[in-house]
Length: 47
Image (cartoon, rainbow, N blue to C red; front, side, top):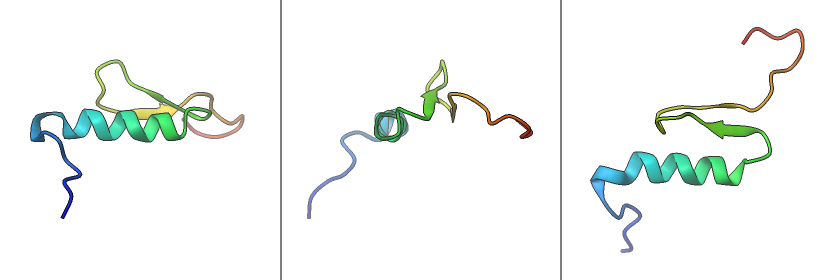
């Protein structure tokens, strides 16, 4: 069986980096690598 987690200490950061990289056209990563948000909001939608 292959490992998907290189280090328990970096699993969240690496997961978020990969998620944002896969959807870079619509997502941006927060300053502290703790949250992901849309690049732009849709007009008329609640943020």
